[in-house]
Image 1: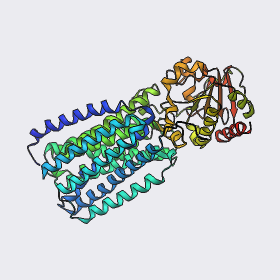
Image 2: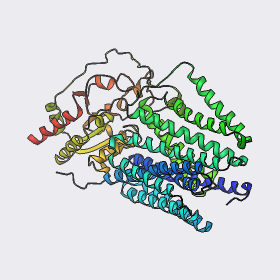
Image 3: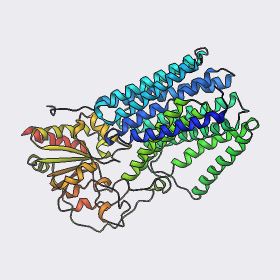
Image 4: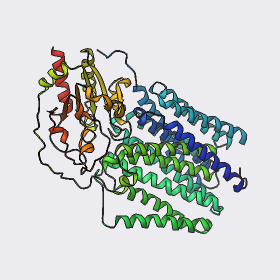
Length: 102
Length: 456
């Protein structure tokens, strides 16, 4: 994992730039009707920090890092699970009715 | 093993991107969200396998507790409370990033320059996302006043806080091994920065703040990815960062204000009394009269504002719309981009009340043909239909794009009283020739109209 940072950094920056461009492209096509689910959904995605939290907690060098990492895991999981479920709950409500009810 | 993990991360990243892409249509959005969640599941699983992490049981406990809280939050939240929910979840993402940065630093204090810089940025952005989100949550929840909090010398304080981030960051990055206290100080300053930057922003501007905090939480995750050199974090962090920035931009445009103006001006702190010379007579009508007008009209546009949600009148509104449709009237809902308390909020509230999404129209789709509409019904909206934004150069909202209901043949405004809107701006719409006021609680008035229809 620990290659010389100067070899890795350009690669990481490249990924960063491409992801930003891609994100801008994809997200600017989302209509305003779906902006709230978009926001809570992308919010859930930002809970990806859980991956970093798992690494931080799991490498088990000392108990302080493990505790901090574990707390981070818990918070990030709230973000992930809460975000996806509430987004799903909202999207379930978006329906098209052919005939007005009643 | 590394290869396997990297491979799983690539699949996860693809699922996130394709999932977001599917958010561009209501019909495919739900699948998109599910794909994205599968991506997340894979990313977590891959990490656990790769780092062989299942050993300390605490981690599993952390995951279980976090998931349980997440499930409960997602179940109990009311749709009107979505903005608070998103703010809170954002905050949790931010604090998680801060804790990751701290744990990494504690593990290896004598890090190289690259790690030191990315770590300090992670904790500052993470901390500011957390405390800023908590303040936004408190304002939305009305635990604290929605009014901007301004005090003399505020700019100086903000500048000092920012300066201490820069100075502290430089000192820390040069010699991280011997500067643990400065690191702690940086976390504290990040938290303070979140508070000082959100308190001067008024409740009406919260859609912008939430979008911006959403972006910050992405950036914090992305930075944490740079710290541990993890590609999936960088990819997804930047996706979310970009999404937040785009939404922030859309919100600012919809209010015709620059981001700087939203963040620093304390808009809404002074109630602009306005020149309240009467521009005409206010004409009110009863529910029965309104029924007569609606019954004979061929096309009706509803313009809902946050007042509709406050009165919990979404269902009554949907019922009236259905009855109108049955009566042969063409019904649409015109939704202003900043209606509600976060981007797209009003659409969710109407979807919850069973309004079909193909009836929900954006401002720009409605305005070109609004002069052919027989009746525009404004419910609990004020500033977003204020023609002063178009006509009165001295108005604080001049230049803001509005739904031009005043150009419809008839306008019915449902309102509690003649009080000014959130920004305290006089609305000449109420005095126009073609406008009639229907005073009362939105829900009660709508129900009255519904029963008038059912009587006949």
